[in-house]
Length: 407
Image (cartoon, rainbow, N blue to C red; front, side):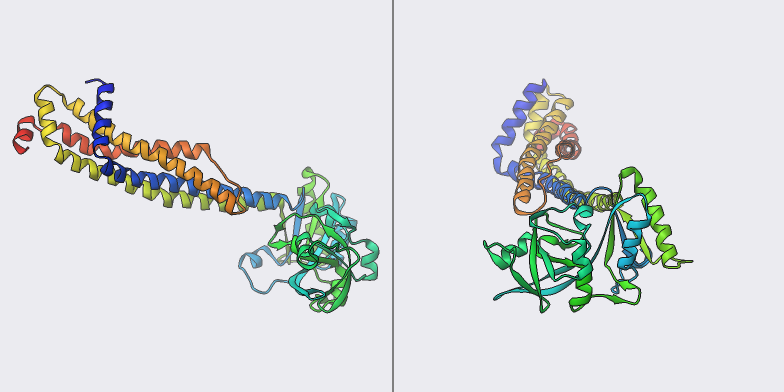
């Protein structure tokens, strides 16, 4: 019997038992859909995280208070070891640096007339726009003169503007931040959150003003404490040099002889860490979903064994009229492969639909991995072949006389 005849007979047999064939495929359908959706979800999360980190700005270094070991231990007490003077020293004494920005943030109640919002109030230095690649949509940003005078001016994010002012212009209006009046002089273009802080829903004020006028401003005998310092290197080739020079400068300024009370991370290192985490997450999700593919394969084997027992007479008759063991083996293998491939195709369609739905309902970008789809469909076909071999061999080895007597 040739392949075409075996394929035709297998198709007719499966069509004659539609319900059983459908239920058998269900495990493969669910397995394929799960694997493709989970891989797509993981890749979408990876793209989302990478996009967030890229918004931090080009050639950026982050100087964070506390040693790397202290921060990795997850201490609830955030160390306060960096001050504004450190940022100023970096800007003045490190030649490989293009711009430096210092930030200090804390939540405050912001009020405009009868509207209130509890948001992050971020004290920033004037170079914040340059280093972090933000743009002002309307008005202006904080200037050096505002820092010198500790001016009571504020720049707000677009989301906060909508919450407080609706469709009214915000420029020139006065808001109260922690009970202190500020004039709104600018509105930032929408950019989204990064480093866990949504600047679209935040108020930015001069760092000196936050320290002197707002409750909760950080005070230190060494100067104005900051949450972190962001540094923009002159170019990508200068990043390693800038990190080395900043480390030496801060060690001298802080009189450090043993463990550093700060650490420096780059955008590249953050991307590497994020890709490692999301890659491991994607692999874990795919492995968990892959279990359902294995279960689907067991379902195929179980149903094929039942089919062999039910079709003992048919097998005996076919062997009696000249069908060889390879003919019987081929027919049952083809049936198993058809079930697994059909289930794989339907599961792939459902998985792709799930990924597109995730892209619509979540901030994750839909990640359609052609490689993952191809591998999953191939694996599902292989599962059909693997789990179909044992029942097919049992059918092929049946003695025709015994089969006819049993029937």
